[in-house]
Image (cartoon, rainbow, N blue to C red; front, side):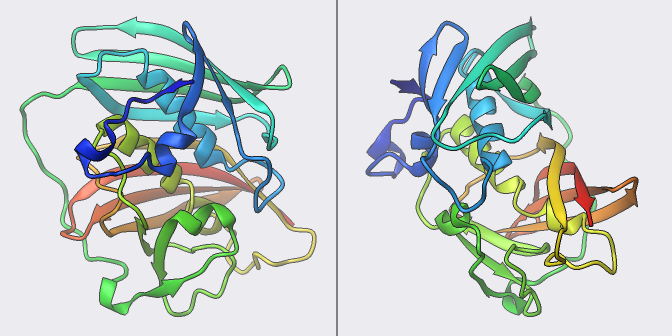
Length: 274
């Protein structure tokens, strides 16, 4: 088995983290195969997990000095547990500063995800972000236990009024255990985490997430990686809606560290049917 390289205790992690286990592939050239869990808290594979695995497969084919810059993907169909996922990487372009990769995730011979990811060699330049008032101060947040099993790797703090099975943004989040000090591994952890909040945030106003017969699913997702990310430190995830029409809700998200530094931006459109 081969996956994203980890140096274990040299990075402050005595054993392989769950993120590295999630990125453990069988590799044949630019084709990566991963076996996902035998069961999960919901019927279909968590989209953030497949997105993280696709990013790792893409990253394994680029110069290690080039770090994830952004990813844009479509969730084409739901994935199944306990079935191999084949990640086919296409080397779209290798440049001096940027590398571009396309990843197709296949299960049962059918595409379940399509991703385009870009990797950038770090460069000196301006460093700026707009000031923003936190939508939820850490001292005002409360611990949250979600009904989603894949969230048990994290500590989550939400608003006191969040009584949903999900974590409705804004919320604070961190991993319970340290993650290897590797930019690609941590970018994959961020990608995994970034899919927690958008679907509930895209819910049409005046509707209930628990309404009988309701159905929700992620359609597409994007992440822009701005600054270094440490998953075991507290980060605030804010997601705000932009539009609801044609049974689709569009949201944008911002992930800040505890000092208020913008670490990443996200966007997602979700399907909501009632």
